[in-house]
Structures are given as structure tokens and as C-alpha cells.
Image (cartoon, rainbow, N blue to C red; front, side, top):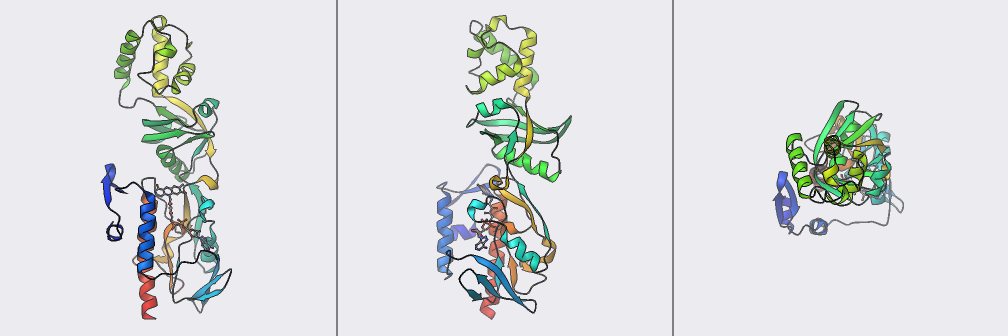
Length: 332
Ligand SMILES: Cc1cc2nc3c(=O)[nH]c(=O)nc-3n(C[C@H](O)[C@H](O)[C@H](O)COP(=O)(O)OP(=O)(O)OC[C@H]3O[C@@H](n4cnc5c(N)ncnc54)[C@H](O)[C@@H]3O)c2cc1C
């Protein structure tokens, strides 16, 4: 926060200690980082790709790019992960680290949207649900539970709650027989929801069920919930039986979807795994194996849940590695 404020970004702290620019514009952060780089007299070259790191007698000597060999007193490897390669991170750093003797924990896609079997999910694409509770279950076992926002897509589900749960599924190494269960009304316990339904049913008793749930659900969700509850959408509310109302209540508290698996690397938000932290000095981000080599960001075996933890890890390790590498260069 001190670095960003110093470089002209006014910050605000929101619920849960999450920090944003007051403007809510990511671009302001990019511009601040550019100002920081310019003030530090850093030259940026974007038209050439790094092909490898040159090391002699256990010490960094330079980098080889597609255009030239650049002599360097120190190198910071910050090549990112393997996920979302459209942003340039294609996993090159892992190969170089391996060649230099570093251990690389097998990279895996993480914070990744999930493919869902049920066709009705695709009917809801573009719909965001807020303040829902989603459980990741395997049989009877609840593996994780998250509260917040999720999104239906053309393949299944995404959004903060889903990404966080996908991370958990990855950690547990569980892939088979997974389901997601959405509680659409987590603020109401079973009794309160039952009372709420009764109140709505009394209010809309002369309407068909399909026209009686607007107070309770987003419009696009209504036909899906009615279908899954096994009730005719055209049935008049005053004709609905107690059993049917119970079935509707169960659906509202437990909308179940079958998880087919994660989306591919190209859509994973982060990469879990990476260069092992064991061979890196935590106070400096320096390699314990190669002199004057530093690591920062997602190329490392660091994976956080959603909420800014990955950007924070990249910023913090990047700052530290940059400062320490610069000290080496100045002293050289
Ligand atoms: C869609 C999306 C949304 C995200 N949202 C969040 C979020 O809300 N909060 C959060 O904390 N994190 C988020 N992340 C994750 C976060 O962006 C990353 O963790 C972070 O950017 C990692 O920073 P990095 O500098 O280590 O790597 P990167 O940002 O991946 O940068 C690596 C750079 O190295 C360059 N490079 C790689 N190989 C070479 C080479 N051979 N030669 C030259 N250049 C090379 C790449 O072009 C790239 O510019 C999101 C990621 C994605 C994809």
C-alpha cells in the first residue's frame, strides 16, 4: 500500500480487509507501476523473448533473448505460471529453474471454473447469484462450503465462490463423484424459509406457480427451480400440496449439480505448484543454488485463494527480489 500510495494511487479498504484503488480502475495500478519503473530508470524491452539464463561457475552471468545476449549482474525470474497463457505466461521459467537444479513442484491449474453435466445450467448462462452458499460434496461428505457470488456460464459455473471451491478440490486431489449444492436462501433456516414460502403462497394464491416466485428468486431461475421441484409451472398456488411445497423448499436449499471436471489451463486463474520454496531464501527471494538469481511471483510454488492473495504474493516477492537484486547490481 505504501508503494502504491507513494506513486499516486489513492487506496480504500473494503469489507474483509480487501484493498482497492479509490477509482476502482485496475489501469491506475498499472500506471503507478509504470511511474515507479520510470523513476527507477528501468528500461523495458517487450519485443524480444527470453530464451534462457546464462550461468557460469554457479553464478548468473546474463540472459539470452531472441535478439541478443544481455550481460547481467543479477537476474529476477518472474515469468509467471502456466495458466492463462494469453497473458504471456507459458511456463518458461519452470524449464530454466529445472535446468539450474531447482526442484519444481508439478504445476497444476488452480482457481479454475468447473464444467457441469446438467443441461439446465447452460440455460442460465450469464446469470450471477449473490449471497448464496455453495457446498462442494462427494457423496455425503462436505469438502468445502463458501458463501458469496457465483456465475452460470455456457459450460458450467464460475465466480469467486466456485473458484475457491475448485482450489479445495485440487488440494484434496479429489476428482471423482463431485457435486455442487447451492443453498439459494442461506440467510433463512428451514423453518423461516417454510414460513416465507407460506406467506408468498398466501399473497399469490390466485396465481400460477410460475408467476408467484418473483419475490423470492431471479426471474431466469424460476422455471429451473420449479422443474427440479417436480411441480407443474401452471399449477395454481392455492392447489399446491404440502408435499409439493416441501419439494420446492428442498430445491431452494439444495440445488444440486454434477461436476464433470475443471476447465483447461487456458482458463485457470492461477497455477498451483512451481519452483519449490525450499531452495529459496525467504528474506531475499535469492536462490540457494545459483548466485545472484532471484525468484518472484507465480513461478514459485505459491497458490492463494481468491481475494487478492496471488497479486499480493507477486507484489511482495517482486518488491523484495527487485530490491535485493538492485543492491547486488549497485555493489557490482
Ligand atoms: C483473468 C485473471 C484474473 C485474475 N484475478 C486475480 C485477482 O483478482 N486477485 C489476485 O490476487 N490474482 C488474480 N489473478 C492472478 C494474478 O494475476 C497472478 O497471480 C499474477 O499476475 C502473477 O504475477 P507474476 O508477475 O508472477 O506473473 P504474470 O503476471 O503472469 O507475469 C509474467 C510475465 O512474464 C512474461 N514472460 C513469461 N515468459 C517469458 C519469456 N520467456 N520471455 C519474456 N517474457 C516472458 C509474460 O509475458 C508475463 O508478462 C488473476 C489472473 C487471471 C488470469
